Image (cartoon, rainbow, N blue to C red; front, side, top):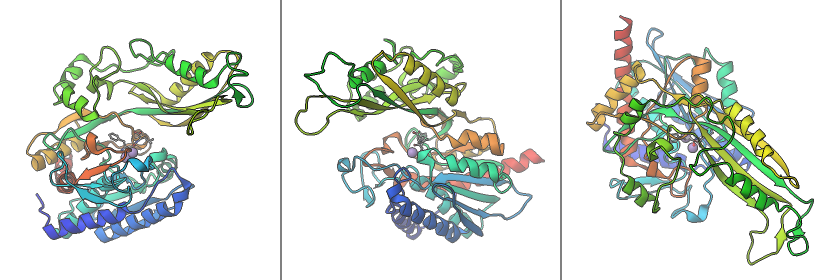
Length: 463
Ligand code: BES
Ligand code: MN
Ligand code: MN
């Protein structure tokens, strides 16, 4: 194992803090210049770490940062993917410290301290582990193969331009394995390797009733109230067992085998701790499945936002003309996100009563992904985690989505290894997002071992 000096550790933290200060919010065009700054920062960091060639690739949206250090065409090539863009920090008032002024604080789960800032875990902190791992390998003369970096600025908004970039640059991006740290693990005592990502279909619906907002006394009871109707329609999307009622929704779902479900149930998980951490008195979900199954191998439908009418101070008696909602569906292998989007649209329109019009906007989406556990990428990751944690990692399917990952396989023909070092409690996308220093340094130590074992296994397989 490569050891990192205390001075280097402190410098790595300081550098990451510097990056976290840049509000690279991809969803909000007000921050376009900041996103650009973030890209330049990453490009310089790649050069400083040892990339011989780096470039900022402009796109119709936010730029992609590319870097490479190619040492020998006979050696395998690892392509590292990550993202430097972050989610909006809202609601900012719920943060204990400002989202772009990183602070280090200790907590029960992170006795060694954690960096609190938007993007600390998702994904700047995890992406930066790879840049520092490169630096360490180069400085100690331990880089065993070729490496390419592709760090994008639009992951949180659907990666549309990255899709174009990979389709147009298949040769440049040629690789043997893709390495990604943009997921989590079970706990700091029990590492896990993510073996699945859910797909996603993201919709927006607008229900329109009368042509203008109306006095709720003069018109109330006599016309369809779009907010009443919208909530009623949404309520119909689940039945009493919390199954989704859209016709055809489950048609192609690949059911997970009983033996795999048994295997999943062995993962350490305490329902009381889970409820305590979230301060809920009961879990809730689809009949017939456990909590771990509900949040990983089952498809879901959730309202992400709903608005309309009067929401200001005091009371205003009004029937709004329009009601809006954003609805996402998490998908599992077998479901095609474009077909599901279509099924949703058809069904949602069909359940609208006379008296309202329904408009549907289809946002981004992506397919689910399963990583194999019998390839040398997974095996190398398994060995690397075993060394640094002293415990064997467990394969675990994740509930989140990274829509570009299935496209990597489709376009570039190679598999991804999802070596995540975050914890579910790190509050990604939420106020007070943080990333443990323990996790950050474990990542930097584990990654070089991955390279070493991967190249060993690659050579053994060849001979
Ligand atoms: N890094 C996350 C995805 C993730 C987190 C997967 C934890 C597994 C475990 C990624 O940045 C993300 O937030 N993805 C979005 C989808 C995207 C299209 C906005 C998601 O999952 O909501
Ligand atoms: Mn991410
Ligand atoms: Mn994210």
